[in-house]
Image 1 (cartoon, rainbow, N blue to C red):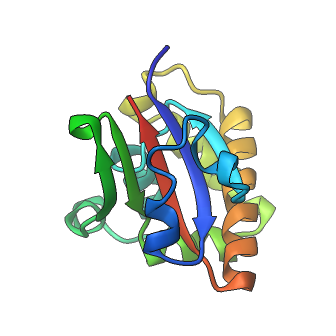
Image 2 (cartoon, rainbow, N blue to C red):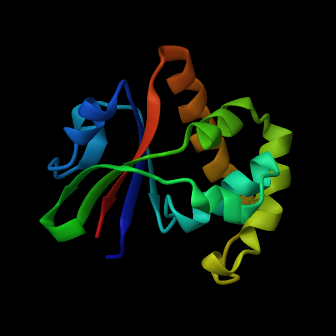
Length: 146
């Protein structure tokens, strides 16, 4: 089955943490959600943040991605994404997202299997989520189910 990663927007850490035990993840709580299998919030989104912002990858991964909830010995996890990534996604237009998809697809974490066009679609969905969250004053999170 693999690891499930649901990216979602919530007003605060408490609302995000409340999704930890939902069988269907944050979408079950009617929170805006983008479901992505195989795109982790740590390494892959760290690389994405570096590409979008121009900030060195080591600096990006040095920022802590804080868990807001954990269950089942870490098999279920909710983490807050960085504000820097949320802002970069929100500010990026479609041309920028397509531009970034190309080098992102070549990173070793995708194992040479990623299609830049598919990743551009992923980025478009994440950017829309980020823009909507910004409009509402929400924050971005990731629900992880191993």
